[in-house]
Length: 303
Image 1 (cartoon, one colour):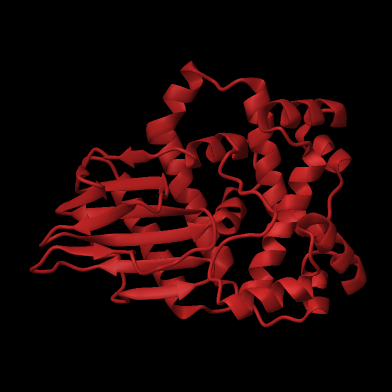
Image 2: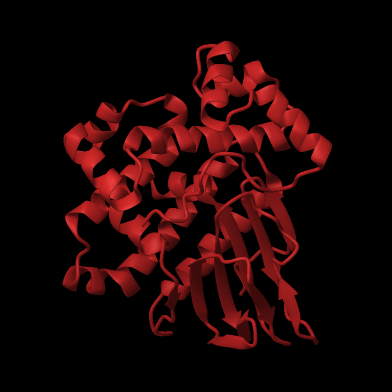
């Protein structure tokens, strides 16, 4: 693990990174870090053994290996004594930015929604490249310098492409997902990166290469919601997070989310949730609520 920096733990929202140094005792990692909504964990096991615990059951991973998974709240990561590696945690926005819009974006999104373990042949340079990428991520998260998120997202994309090449690509070539699922995956990816740009359904459909009616039919049939509703819910979810967690004014939040004015944002939020954003913020702070959304569904049911 010579390419990993000495930095132990660092947070650069919406990312968290931790270097796992060899210890004389077993210990849990990542358990005290809270993310709003869905998040992913990427675990580099340089040496030793890690247990992925779920209740009384545990999946054992031996190093060297790279573990990637959309995370569930009922799981824990136990690092056994003498083991070393690194942990990366990221939210939906960071993942979407990392995946980007290249031709393989839909395949990378499909891969990202699965639990994947890469156990590279030690005769190859795969693990060295992965370790180098993790080292860059850890340094950038710790430093938080201008442009750090861009560097981190680029390294995460490299990790995903390596996983895709060495684990998922042959399988996906044999059993490609249905066209409708690929369209949903592409729509989700585009939505995560462009909902602040206030794209219309027609513009999303054009970027995907389908008609608005085709996109509407697929979303309604698969998710029970038309694409316009999904676009509104994504903006509403982001608004709720900002109202609860940030000190930004309503004008600033409105501008951040692409609204022309605070009045337009206020009308949008009230229509979506049933209460004005100012009242939502006041009620959330009064109740000391740390999580939970009012009137906006999660994105866990997306493919």
